[in-house]
Length: 375
Ligand SMILES: C[S@@+](CC[C@H](N)C(=O)[O-])C[C@H]1O[C@@H](n2cnc3c(N)ncnc32)[C@H](O)[C@@H]1O
Image (tube, rainbow, N blue to C red; front, side, top):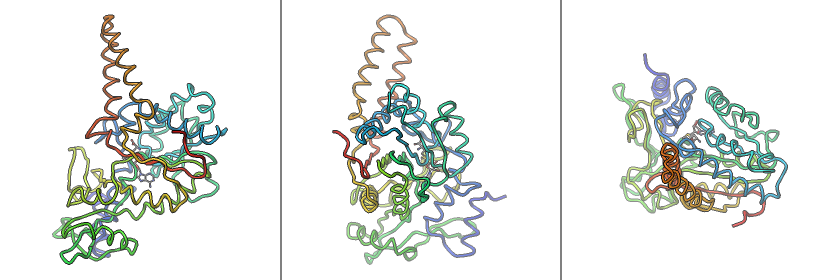
């Protein structure tokens, strides 16, 4: 029997012809019965890891960032983090677990999860245990004004690289066409066709002037609407996006075949048409497009840097030095089990800023209404 995602892809192609890659990616990741993210999340036992799933240190450092936002907003009684696509809730767990040490800020802190899939919400509730008392769940980010929080921060950690993207290709004549998914002899194959959405024209023209024939790039049309919802989700506050990506034109120039890759039970891959629903499909985030959309929706960009630099500004270096000293002391005093545990902790903390790894992830922060964060 054919898997539900594959069945629906073939059904849609039979009914309406080749599907824009964007529609295919949406089914592969979010089909309610078989989409990759309908039942799976990254982290231990998953196909890949993320910073919050690697170590609670990430949540502890993010708590410092959130504390700074709360201070800059004049210490409001209630500060709500609206986290989109929280996976196993490891970031919330890391932050909320240290809320007790954060004084008035900790007492003001609430967490709202925006999660499409009930099964994943359940997983998040179980993961949080008693900490779930400070949390609530919503299936949508917006646009419900009753749902708006007063002061807070919308966080999307490794979420935008899973937004379905249109894939464009520059033709010999310098025009731009779009990649579709078609069926040939029961197999899924690529097919080039005209742009499927007028919203792609501006991006296509901008990129075509930089790229030679045959070069590909991805465009997320959805980021614009999502940004509007993010802006509506908080009356005043912040937006924090942490993800793999780059700015124009560097992002476009990176790889002639674009940036789409997959992660599945057999590891890293480059063929998104293989086994739809069984693999994660990601495209690097275009932070120039994110910045333009953020400005259009009333956010003032404040920060764009690597995770390495961002965590350094939050005290990563001092934390690592402290752990290193503690591990050395434990070794010198013959407490070898403790020393090994501290070394393991330190190694995870260091991974967060590693080169060719988590440290290269980009961080974008923008503010809506409140004063700028202190440097
Ligand atoms: C790569 S996982 C990241 C999970 C978690 N943030 C982490 O870093 O461990 C991406 C998650 O974002 C979710 N997601 C993608 N687009 C979303 C959207 N528009 N609204 C809510 N969740 C979304 C996916 O369902 C998936 O669970």
